[in-house]
Structures are given as structure tokens and as C-alpha cells.
Length: 119
Image (cartoon, rainbow, N blue to C red; front, side, top):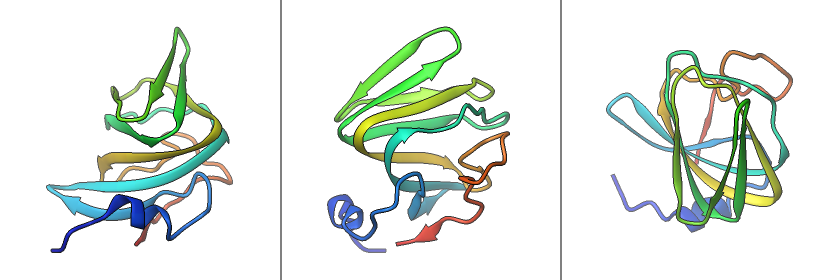
């Protein structure tokens, strides 16, 4: 294992909503994603989902509330909770999730990624 520089890893890709894997530990994966615009409503029935904002500001819409996350903040979405991420400007986010998770949760769509690229 070697040191992982998150800022350098973000320079390796430009796609939005396509998470990239930078590591694994204890059955979990560490993903980086650049996001901009609105994602789809979805839930992860069996997995919690952790968002850590590295750069920018992210809005998480829930059916009963809205949460805004800023740089350096973390939010954990409990399993089964429907949500929709929104980024008015490009946001860099670190995600910590189980290996078997689909980033669109219980919804299959044209934005679903089934295998995350290692960078």
C-alpha cells in the first residue's frame, strides 16, 4: 500500500456521476466522484452511505427535508432512506460504501455504474 493523494486522484478524471475507486478496506470501498447537476431519487436498501465533501457544496434532498453539506463535512445516509444529491456547481466527494453497492441503489437507469474503475 502507498500514500493516496486525493487531490491528485481527482485530477485523473473529469466525468460527473461516475465514481472511481481509490481503495478498499474491511469489505468497504473508498470512492471519489465529481458531481454536478441533479442525480436521481434512489435508496440503498441494505447499506448506509457516507458522503464527505472535499470541494464545493452539495445539497441532499430527502422526502421530508433538505441538507446542505460544505467542504470538510460528512453526512451518513441510513440504509433504506430515499435521497437525491444535487450540485449546482461541480463538487468533489469521497464516498465510503460496501463493495457490492450500486451507486443508484434500488434504481437501474442509464447513469448506473456496475463496476467502479480503480484509479
